[in-house]
Image (cartoon, rainbow over all chains, first blue to last red; front, top):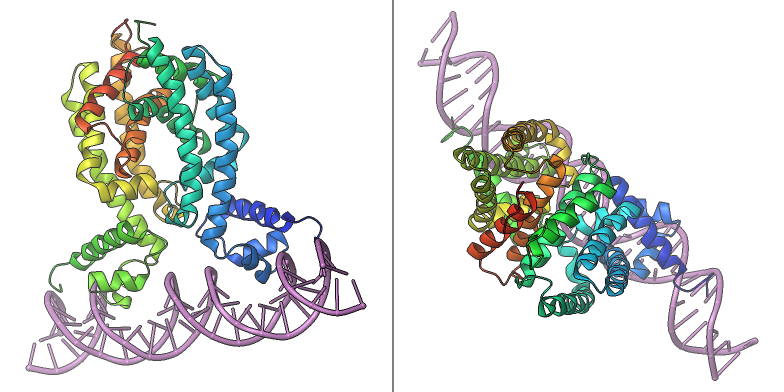
Length: 198
Length: 198
DNA sequence: CCCTTGACTAGAATTATATTCCAGATTATA
DNA sequence: TATAATCTGGAATATAATTCTAGTCAAGGG
């Protein structure tokens, strides 16, 4: 192998992410990515068949990291309240720790370039959704969470996180993150709890 | 004037939005826009100095329409509960009625091309934010809504709308929209009400 | 009525950038 | 070591944005 197999590939993905965060997706040229990754044009195109596919690869790398971590944290929690808080905390912490990935993942979510890796992304999402769904089903059955359609559930829990994260990433959030976790968790729990609650 | 002043301009904006929705921003070429709007290359560049600026104009047109409508609905409501429901209903209805604008506005929100019209956008947003802020301040003062930082408030109300809208627009929402309005309103109210509530 | 001006339109020329191509280098393996 | 597979470099090509030049058209002043 040259150095390590996959080494170049990772270098290029890293460089691409850096460029995308610094200058935006449309603005970064392949030449920028070559320069930053110290790989030649030919090399980049050997590993990724287009700018779009490279962007997809960046996306995939990020989403995988995010999802596995979230599921890890969630599975540790057996009480509904704590599980929901854990999700919210995980999401916001992840954003704080990985601002570049976050920007890319959450803002590029609907880019058409993702079509290139659609199957891979769908596979990831499907498994992720299934496991999240199971967790909720368990708690609805047990009676600790109100019976609400899953899409609404997701909207009520993740929506506020996303919106706060958006503000946070653009420097427009005033509330500290730990307080945001508390407040958003409280809101989510008030909305989802079976019994009356503060 | 040729025909009507500003007529060409509007034609071009309309054509651009159509192209963007059908093929995505990156994928549509200026040639596509010329073809669809029946304007020549030169004409398009006479009215808009770049593809980016054209996209900005599209964005601006949409956001203005959205914001004025929302404020209109909100100002009609004097009870806190009803105001919050009105906001949520307005948002989701707007998305349902204007899927193309919605996709463009909410997905392109962070595109760097917006920098071109930054001042105009900031001016709109600033006024919008001020008026929203006043509405909430009134109700917090009156004691009907818990005292929560504004960014969290926005996150808790608009976040779920956005997330549901995203699912809706990509055809992944299962819950009907009128039910979504009810559920999300209930959730928001549970989270924000000063007194215990269902 | 003619001339000038400014707003607008057309399409060709230019430039920037993504993509393709191919020759050569490096590594793994037989 | 021979050979195939993988990888790299950079030039050549293609595509699409942008600029440029030469107009057309309507309105108003002299």
